[in-house]
Amino acid sequence: MELTRRHAKLCFLIAAGISFVLSVLLWFLVDKAQGVFVGIWVPSILSFGTLMMQKERPNE
Image 1 (cartoon, one colour):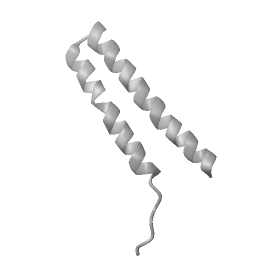
Image 2 (image 1 turned 135 degrees about the vertical axis):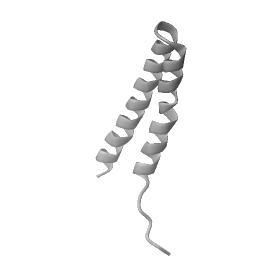
Image 3 (image 1 turned 135 degrees about the horizontal axis):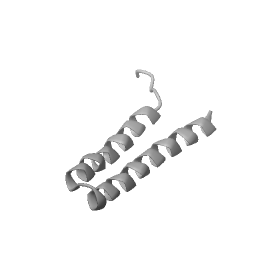
Image 4 (image 1 turned 60 degrees about the horizontal axis):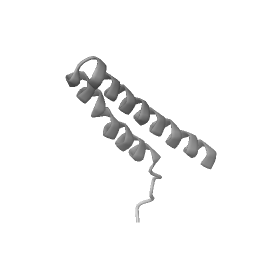
């Protein structure tokens, strides 16, 4: 089970990293507005990953 969580964390980090690199490439090579648009995906991906990785806590 823990191995699966590690893979999930790694997938979210890789997705955020790809988004970051793509945003930098777009900024410098294509259009700055598109680079900013893709760049704002990074915190969204990381936030979604954090939300999905939280364990359910029983009501106390």
